[in-house]
Amino acid sequence: MARRIGFWLSVPCPVLGLVGVLDCTGHVTQPPPPQCNGTALNGDPSGRPACAQPQSPIGPCTSPITTVTQTTLSAPATLEAEVMTAIDPRPNRQFVYAATTEATVTPSSGPTQKCIIAKRIRVWRSENLGGAWKEMPGSPSLPQGQYVADPEISVGGDGTVFVTFVRTVPSPDCANFVPFNPMEVQLWFAPPGETAGQTLQPALPSVPTRFGDTAPSIAQSAQIVDHPQIAASPVVNGRQQVSVYVAQVGASDFVATFERNGALWTERGSFSVPGSLTFTNLSYDLDGDLYVAIGTSRSVERRLWTGRSGKCGRCRWSAREHRRSPAELPTCTR
Image 1 (cartoon, rainbow, N blue to C red):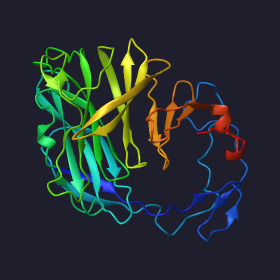
Image 2: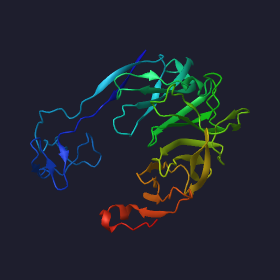
Image 3: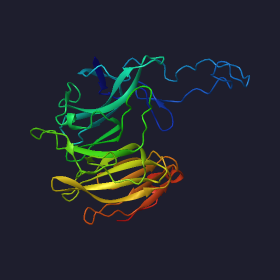
Image 4: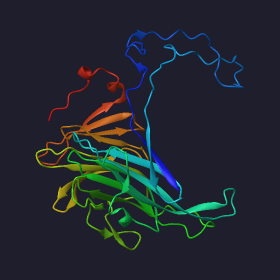
């Protein structure tokens, strides 16, 4: 069954300004004052009167808001969800990557007449900014016949591709739920897109797992994990790091950081994130500093990396501080 991935965005029109709205000619206009203090919900239990949909403050815009190019993928006729994409950040490169989740379904007596008993991850690559896609070599080596989901993908400053996901045991049939216990997070990588025979491969040494096999698994303390996030740094003084956030049930979430060591990657250290299932997000800046956005505390930590010792200092910014101007933010010294 054909699958489509939408790609490419043009500059939107209109554009929100600091004190108003930029119309299609570039002029700033003020939005009209509200004409109704009622409700936009039909049958609002508060009894307030209904409000009509307000007119746009800028009127119609003749230029398209976005331009979308869709490309058909020759994928199996299985459910695909949680599609993640990443673009090679280097200038004049056109490599794009996508990770999809494909489900194994079987007949069921439920309302849909089928149920999901297993999942797998498939990684795709494009050499022309999404104009055409092919399955990345090495993708079939990712776990199959298991329940593998929650993919995340990132491309480092040198074009190295990183993929992480969670794995648990599948369900034998529709009469049994997927147990989601135990679970693990794996880390894979591929060299830059211009590398001959670019192939997805394990990023970590294979270690014994809770499933009775060996795999490139990240060390964790909880049995149940969820939605890992990943970010790869630029190359700093010839070195590069990749960090993976792991959400845990019954234990504090954590972030583990890895650095290239020969053919594989070695953990340089990890730190806990206060709370469980905080759904933290990671990103690196051009200096190699790691930013950790923690959803439950509405805060951002900036962890400084010198590129020499591999150790991170920490400067924590609260949500209130982030509403200030950049000049008023606390200063982190290296």
